[in-house]
Amino acid sequence: MPDILAEPFFQRALLAGLAIASVAGPVGCFIVWRRMAYFGETLAHSGLFGVGLGLLLGFSLTLGAAASAVAVALLLGLLRKQRFLATDTLLGILSHGSLALGILTVGLVTGATGDHLDLLFGDILTVSWQDVSLVWAGAAAVLLLLSLLWRDLIAISVHEELAEAEGIQVRRVELGFVILIALMTAVAMKIVGLLLITALLVIPAAAARRLSNGPEAMAMVAAGLACAAVVLGLVLSAYANAVTGPAIVLSAAFLFVLTLLRPQAN
Image (cartoon, rainbow, N blue to C red; front, side, top):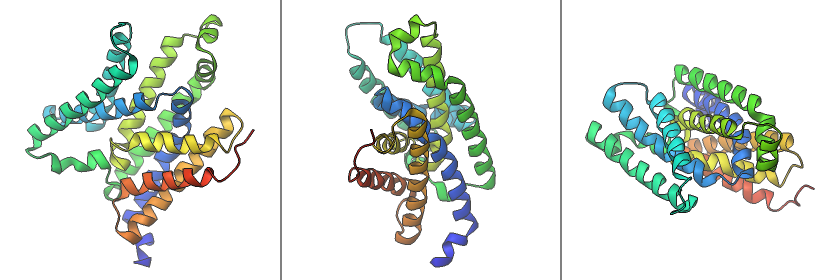
Protein backbone atom coordinates (compact mmCIF):
# COMPACT_ATOMS: atom_id res chain seq x y z
CA MET A 1 0.00 0.00 0.00
CA PRO A 2 2.76 2.59 0.75
CA ASP A 3 3.96 2.27 -2.86
CA ILE A 4 0.62 3.43 -4.20
CA LEU A 5 1.67 7.07 -3.88
CA ALA A 6 4.39 6.43 -6.48
CA GLU A 7 2.01 4.80 -8.96
CA PRO A 8 1.49 6.71 -12.25
CA PHE A 9 -2.32 6.64 -11.88
CA PHE A 10 -2.03 8.31 -8.46
CA GLN A 11 0.33 10.98 -9.82
CA ARG A 12 -2.03 11.69 -12.72
CA ALA A 13 -4.94 11.97 -10.31
CA LEU A 14 -2.97 14.35 -8.10
CA LEU A 15 -2.01 16.62 -11.00
CA ALA A 16 -5.57 16.71 -12.34
CA GLY A 17 -7.02 17.35 -8.89
CA LEU A 18 -4.62 20.20 -8.17
CA ALA A 19 -5.56 21.83 -11.47
CA ILE A 20 -9.24 21.78 -10.55
CA ALA A 21 -8.57 22.93 -6.99
CA SER A 22 -6.48 25.92 -8.07
CA VAL A 23 -9.47 27.18 -10.08
CA ALA A 24 -12.29 26.06 -7.77
CA GLY A 25 -10.99 28.21 -4.92
CA PRO A 26 -11.07 31.63 -6.67
CA VAL A 27 -14.28 30.89 -8.59
CA GLY A 28 -15.93 29.66 -5.41
CA CYS A 29 -15.14 32.95 -3.68
CA PHE A 30 -17.47 34.81 -6.01
CA ILE A 31 -20.13 32.14 -5.57
CA VAL A 32 -19.93 32.67 -1.80
CA TRP A 33 -19.81 36.48 -2.05
CA ARG A 34 -22.81 36.60 -4.37
CA ARG A 35 -24.73 33.87 -2.53
CA MET A 36 -24.93 31.75 -5.69
CA ALA A 37 -24.33 28.28 -4.23
CA TYR A 38 -27.74 27.00 -5.33
CA PHE A 39 -27.21 28.58 -8.75
CA GLY A 40 -23.89 26.76 -9.12
CA GLU A 41 -25.54 23.49 -8.12
CA THR A 42 -28.22 24.02 -10.75
CA LEU A 43 -25.60 24.51 -13.47
CA ALA A 44 -23.74 21.40 -12.32
CA HIS A 45 -26.91 19.30 -12.41
CA SER A 46 -27.80 20.60 -15.87
CA GLY A 47 -24.42 19.40 -17.10
CA LEU A 48 -25.63 15.80 -16.93
CA PHE A 49 -28.24 16.51 -19.59
CA GLY A 50 -25.46 17.85 -21.82
CA VAL A 51 -23.54 14.65 -21.21
CA GLY A 52 -26.58 12.65 -22.30
CA LEU A 53 -26.89 14.71 -25.47
CA GLY A 54 -23.20 14.21 -26.14
CA LEU A 55 -23.62 10.46 -25.85
CA LEU A 56 -26.73 10.53 -28.02
CA LEU A 57 -25.32 12.73 -30.78
CA GLY A 58 -21.72 11.59 -30.59
CA PHE A 59 -19.89 14.79 -29.63
CA SER A 60 -17.66 15.80 -26.72
CA LEU A 61 -19.19 15.14 -23.30
CA THR A 62 -17.26 18.10 -21.87
CA LEU A 63 -18.62 20.41 -24.55
CA GLY A 64 -22.12 19.06 -23.98
CA ALA A 65 -21.93 19.67 -20.22
CA ALA A 66 -20.67 23.23 -20.72
CA ALA A 67 -23.26 24.05 -23.40
CA SER A 68 -26.21 22.75 -21.37
CA ALA A 69 -25.05 24.67 -18.29
CA VAL A 70 -24.89 27.92 -20.27
CA ALA A 71 -28.31 27.21 -21.82
CA VAL A 72 -29.90 26.67 -18.40
CA ALA A 73 -28.29 29.86 -17.09
CA LEU A 74 -29.69 31.87 -20.00
CA LEU A 75 -33.11 30.28 -19.48
CA LEU A 76 -33.00 31.24 -15.83
CA GLY A 77 -32.11 34.80 -16.79
CA LEU A 78 -35.25 34.99 -18.92
CA LEU A 79 -37.48 33.37 -16.30
CA ARG A 80 -36.26 35.70 -13.54
CA LYS A 81 -38.13 38.56 -15.23
CA GLN A 82 -41.47 37.00 -14.31
CA ARG A 83 -42.88 37.70 -10.86
CA PHE A 84 -44.97 34.58 -10.31
CA LEU A 85 -42.18 32.44 -8.81
CA ALA A 86 -39.21 33.38 -6.62
CA THR A 87 -35.70 32.80 -7.92
CA ASP A 88 -34.93 30.00 -5.46
CA THR A 89 -38.08 28.19 -6.57
CA LEU A 90 -37.02 28.48 -10.21
CA LEU A 91 -33.58 27.16 -9.30
CA GLY A 92 -35.14 24.18 -7.55
CA ILE A 93 -37.28 23.36 -10.59
CA LEU A 94 -34.43 23.74 -13.08
CA SER A 95 -31.90 21.92 -10.86
CA HIS A 96 -33.92 18.79 -10.19
CA GLY A 97 -35.67 18.81 -13.55
CA SER A 98 -32.41 18.97 -15.51
CA LEU A 99 -30.81 16.33 -13.27
CA ALA A 100 -33.72 13.94 -13.80
CA LEU A 101 -33.73 14.64 -17.55
CA GLY A 102 -29.99 14.01 -17.68
CA ILE A 103 -30.24 10.69 -15.85
CA LEU A 104 -33.05 9.58 -18.15
CA THR A 105 -31.12 10.63 -21.26
CA VAL A 106 -27.94 8.83 -20.19
CA GLY A 107 -29.99 5.76 -19.29
CA LEU A 108 -31.75 5.71 -22.66
CA VAL A 109 -28.47 5.98 -24.54
CA THR A 110 -26.42 3.48 -22.53
CA GLY A 111 -29.18 1.19 -21.31
CA ALA A 112 -28.07 1.64 -17.69
CA THR A 113 -27.29 4.76 -15.71
CA GLY A 114 -24.79 2.78 -13.63
CA ASP A 115 -22.40 2.78 -16.59
CA HIS A 116 -21.79 6.49 -16.05
CA LEU A 117 -21.99 6.94 -12.30
CA ASP A 118 -18.45 8.35 -12.54
CA LEU A 119 -20.01 11.43 -14.16
CA LEU A 120 -22.09 11.99 -11.03
CA PHE A 121 -19.46 11.20 -8.40
CA GLY A 122 -16.16 11.48 -10.27
CA ASP A 123 -13.48 8.92 -11.09
CA ILE A 124 -10.23 10.82 -10.76
CA LEU A 125 -8.10 7.67 -10.42
CA THR A 126 -8.84 6.71 -14.03
CA VAL A 127 -7.66 9.94 -15.69
CA SER A 128 -5.10 9.59 -18.48
CA TRP A 129 -2.19 11.89 -19.29
CA GLN A 130 -4.37 13.32 -22.05
CA ASP A 131 -7.07 14.05 -19.46
CA VAL A 132 -4.49 15.77 -17.27
CA SER A 133 -3.42 17.97 -20.18
CA LEU A 134 -7.02 18.86 -20.99
CA VAL A 135 -7.81 19.64 -17.35
CA TRP A 136 -4.80 21.94 -17.02
CA ALA A 137 -5.67 23.66 -20.31
CA GLY A 138 -9.25 24.14 -19.16
CA ALA A 139 -8.12 25.40 -15.76
CA ALA A 140 -5.79 27.90 -17.43
CA ALA A 141 -8.64 29.15 -19.63
CA VAL A 142 -10.91 29.59 -16.60
CA LEU A 143 -8.21 31.48 -14.68
CA LEU A 144 -7.56 33.73 -17.68
CA LEU A 145 -11.26 34.56 -18.01
CA LEU A 146 -11.50 35.13 -14.27
CA SER A 147 -8.55 37.53 -14.33
CA LEU A 148 -10.24 39.53 -17.09
CA LEU A 149 -13.49 39.75 -15.12
CA TRP A 150 -11.91 40.09 -11.67
CA ARG A 151 -12.33 43.83 -11.00
CA ASP A 152 -15.80 44.02 -12.51
CA LEU A 153 -16.95 40.95 -10.59
CA ILE A 154 -15.71 42.43 -7.33
CA ALA A 155 -17.49 45.72 -8.07
CA ILE A 156 -20.73 43.89 -8.86
CA SER A 157 -20.39 41.72 -5.75
CA VAL A 158 -19.97 44.79 -3.54
CA HIS A 159 -22.82 46.88 -4.99
CA GLU A 160 -24.46 45.93 -8.27
CA GLU A 161 -26.41 49.16 -8.79
CA LEU A 162 -23.36 51.32 -8.08
CA ALA A 163 -21.25 49.24 -10.44
CA GLU A 164 -23.84 49.71 -13.18
CA ALA A 165 -23.90 53.47 -12.52
CA GLU A 166 -20.12 53.54 -12.96
CA GLY A 167 -20.46 52.10 -16.46
CA ILE A 168 -19.84 48.41 -15.84
CA GLN A 169 -21.84 46.18 -18.18
CA VAL A 170 -23.39 44.13 -15.40
CA ARG A 171 -25.33 41.70 -17.59
CA ARG A 172 -22.30 41.06 -19.80
CA VAL A 173 -20.09 40.42 -16.77
CA GLU A 174 -22.71 38.11 -15.26
CA LEU A 175 -22.89 36.17 -18.54
CA GLY A 176 -19.11 35.84 -18.51
CA PHE A 177 -19.24 34.52 -14.96
CA VAL A 178 -21.96 32.02 -15.91
CA ILE A 179 -19.79 30.77 -18.79
CA LEU A 180 -16.89 30.55 -16.34
CA ILE A 181 -18.93 28.37 -13.95
CA ALA A 182 -20.06 26.22 -16.88
CA LEU A 183 -16.45 25.68 -17.98
CA MET A 184 -15.49 24.90 -14.41
CA THR A 185 -18.29 22.33 -14.19
CA ALA A 186 -17.29 20.67 -17.45
CA VAL A 187 -13.59 20.54 -16.55
CA ALA A 188 -14.26 19.13 -13.07
CA MET A 189 -16.83 16.58 -14.23
CA LYS A 190 -14.42 13.64 -14.31
CA ILE A 191 -12.59 14.69 -11.15
CA VAL A 192 -15.27 15.01 -8.45
CA GLY A 193 -18.43 14.50 -10.52
CA LEU A 194 -21.35 16.73 -11.37
CA LEU A 195 -23.10 16.17 -8.04
CA LEU A 196 -20.06 17.15 -5.94
CA ILE A 197 -18.47 20.02 -7.88
CA THR A 198 -20.56 22.64 -6.07
CA ALA A 199 -19.18 21.42 -2.74
CA LEU A 200 -15.60 21.83 -3.95
CA LEU A 201 -16.46 25.33 -5.12
CA VAL A 202 -18.24 26.46 -1.97
CA ILE A 203 -16.58 24.72 1.01
CA PRO A 204 -12.96 25.92 0.52
CA ALA A 205 -14.18 29.45 -0.24
CA ALA A 206 -16.37 29.47 2.87
CA ALA A 207 -13.41 28.29 4.96
CA ALA A 208 -11.11 30.90 3.41
CA ARG A 209 -13.55 33.65 4.36
CA ARG A 210 -12.62 33.17 8.01
CA LEU A 211 -8.88 33.21 7.32
CA SER A 212 -8.46 36.25 5.08
CA ASN A 213 -9.29 39.95 5.06
CA GLY A 214 -9.34 40.81 1.35
CA PRO A 215 -10.63 39.37 -1.94
CA GLU A 216 -7.22 38.47 -3.38
CA ALA A 217 -6.09 36.88 -0.11
CA MET A 218 -9.35 34.95 0.16
CA ALA A 219 -8.98 33.61 -3.40
CA MET A 220 -5.43 32.40 -2.68
CA VAL A 221 -6.39 30.82 0.65
CA ALA A 222 -9.41 29.14 -0.97
CA ALA A 223 -7.21 27.70 -3.71
CA GLY A 224 -4.75 26.43 -1.11
CA LEU A 225 -7.50 24.80 0.96
CA ALA A 226 -9.00 23.20 -2.16
CA CYS A 227 -5.57 21.79 -3.09
CA ALA A 228 -5.15 20.46 0.46
CA ALA A 229 -8.59 18.82 0.23
CA VAL A 230 -7.58 17.10 -3.01
CA VAL A 231 -4.37 15.74 -1.47
CA LEU A 232 -6.12 14.57 1.71
CA GLY A 233 -8.97 13.04 -0.30
CA LEU A 234 -6.61 11.11 -2.56
CA VAL A 235 -4.61 9.80 0.41
CA LEU A 236 -7.82 8.79 2.17
CA SER A 237 -8.98 7.05 -0.99
CA ALA A 238 -5.68 5.22 -1.37
CA TYR A 239 -5.31 4.02 2.21
CA ALA A 240 -8.95 3.55 3.25
CA ASN A 241 -10.28 2.33 -0.11
CA ALA A 242 -12.81 5.19 -0.12
CA VAL A 243 -14.61 6.58 -3.16
CA THR A 244 -12.32 9.39 -4.28
CA GLY A 245 -14.74 12.19 -5.22
CA PRO A 246 -16.70 12.09 -1.95
CA ALA A 247 -13.41 11.67 -0.05
CA ILE A 248 -12.15 14.96 -1.51
CA VAL A 249 -15.36 16.76 -0.57
CA LEU A 250 -15.29 15.24 2.93
CA SER A 251 -11.71 16.44 3.31
CA ALA A 252 -12.78 19.95 2.34
CA ALA A 253 -15.55 19.80 4.95
CA PHE A 254 -13.01 18.64 7.55
CA LEU A 255 -10.76 21.61 6.75
CA PHE A 256 -13.78 23.91 7.07
CA VAL A 257 -14.50 22.55 10.53
CA LEU A 258 -10.88 23.19 11.50
CA THR A 259 -11.19 26.82 10.43
CA LEU A 260 -14.11 27.23 12.82
CA LEU A 261 -11.66 26.70 15.66
CA ARG A 262 -9.67 29.77 14.60
CA PRO A 263 -10.75 33.37 15.18
CA GLN A 264 -12.11 35.05 12.07
CA ALA A 265 -9.75 37.47 10.28
CA ASN A 266 -10.65 41.16 10.51
